[in-house]
Length: 283
Ligand SMILES: Nc1ncnc2c1ncn2[C@@H]1O[C@H](COP(=O)(O)OP(=O)(O)O)[C@@H](O)[C@H]1O
Ligand SMILES: [Mg+2]
Image (cartoon, rainbow, N blue to C red; front, side):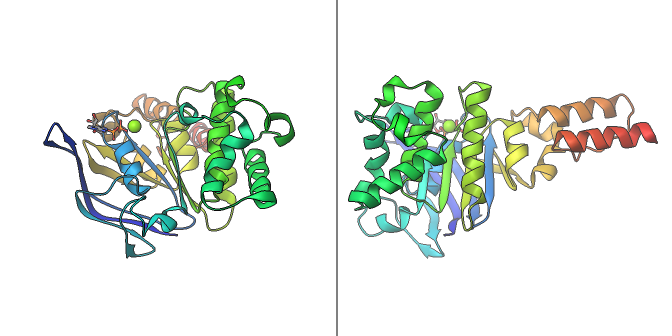
């Protein structure tokens, strides 16, 4: 499934007045893509995520699924197409509601018409996909779990609908390092499956550097930078001017350069950083 945004603008209506939030956005997400959307707080990331998930409709421009112009969810006709796009909200654990974990995860697929053993199998597979043992957690109250586990249950509820595109809004915010790593593993495992695409909203630059194939930097509702992580992260000064702090490894290379070491800025992983430093020391 391909999601397209063409010249999309969006304004919220507040007390009868238009509050413009996004301006002329062009994005395409195809199977196999991993797009990170980043930007300072208030730059429009969450609004953009909701447009890409069909939860808001643009004020101008158009949204397409597989090239076909669509309206938002819940408008009758296009709801089925949007089922192929899963959206994980910020702090999704706040939306857990059922008495048991299994019931919570079953909610989405049941609404899609699944029941019986088919539904049960979906729920189990989704729980396993987020690293939870179905037998141990299914009957428990979601509220008896840790924060990180609750978030994984909420994500399982989306995965159980078997989306082709997974959009996640700040999925690791507020988690400890172990919880963060577990969520990243869930995202990696989803992305490894053929035909899937991920849109990750994050202001964690290390996360973006490690996972994304393409990066969009939003600044005041416009696309300020767009490119591969390497292309984006070597523009340290620009990133700072958009309210972002480059990833730690990029900052390290920048410091070395300022001290006169001619190391490359094209570094995304520890291995690459080591190679760059060794190359400089060797020379
Ligand atoms: N429901 C809403 N009604 C009115 N204004 C909103 C609403 N949601 C967000 N905004 C405003 O839109 C702008 C972008 O918000 P948002 O998309 O949440 O940005 P981000 O996720 O990058 O922090 C902000 O100025 C915010 O105050
Ligand atoms: Mg947000």
